[in-house]
Image 1: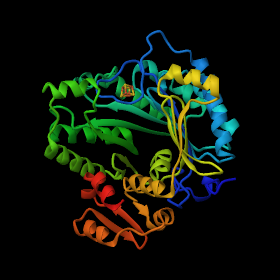
Image 2: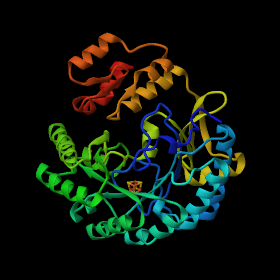
Image 3: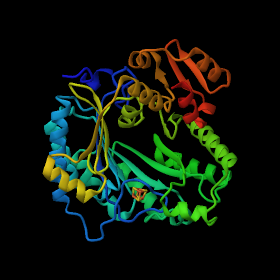
Image 4: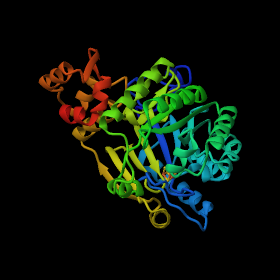
Length: 401
Ligand code: SF4
């Protein structure tokens, strides 16, 4: 059994969240790559299939790829599972149940671990919530994105405000834990409008919110509109003000950011996402999923074929859809640890970073960044980004790495 196979129950905090013990866990990520429609800002691996999807065929392929990942990882104790997408709430509850059974057959899955499913709040999808709960899902993360109809239409979402509010109410009734996403820095959004919307969201969400700034990604319809001057988003200064407002309002309501875009009451953090940011291991299963898997030989980065039907064919032929399996050197792991860990409010453990990289951080660079208020030392062996540092995170990481 691997060193990360300690029972999560032994160190759990209220809400089942483990503190950073240096054993960041083993998550299982399951990617469902289909959506009812493509949102104009989205560059995720999501595909629309108007003719429908043969969910049984995908279940069989998930089962095979899970079995292959199990061969690679050896016996492990799973600390969280996450159905992401795409839109996993387009899956039938039986599909979710069958995939969860396959994970349980492959690895040890303790009772009560966090099992999250991403859902869209359309009324059709909300009718499946009870089925997901019966299948074992205990946390739902909803793509609400805005709480007013004008912005929802502009974002190309298929639900309206009334459906979102209804789905949030239903999720709170059915699932022990829930969260939802909002996008801000939307075209024409004022600080006042965002503050009001955020206050309402905090009242609805209870203990976890994911708040993302709208980014214009190349290859999306929004990119073309933006380039043509037909979609104007807040400038850098306004975006920075919106970010600061977000931190202030969330903190004042007891939901500080535990990661750049994720806010939670202490103990309600997403266990699964913490595994990524604390640089744990995770098996990435399904079309276009990425993983970091500790095998008997090395830590490897995995990536699967993105196109769903091609992935299906590859799994049928090879038992998996992986198109990339590359060994990560210790230096690459140290860089990834820095990149992921500095996203977190808790920061990174310098001893762990040094044991991977075989060196210590350059004291001149560290002092420079501390002097400019971009990072801070919170314990002899721990540093983190300050709020100002979070706003220029990529530059801080590049400087330290
Ligand atoms: S629902 Fe989510 S994954 Fe699907 S297109 Fe919209 S933003 Fe992308």
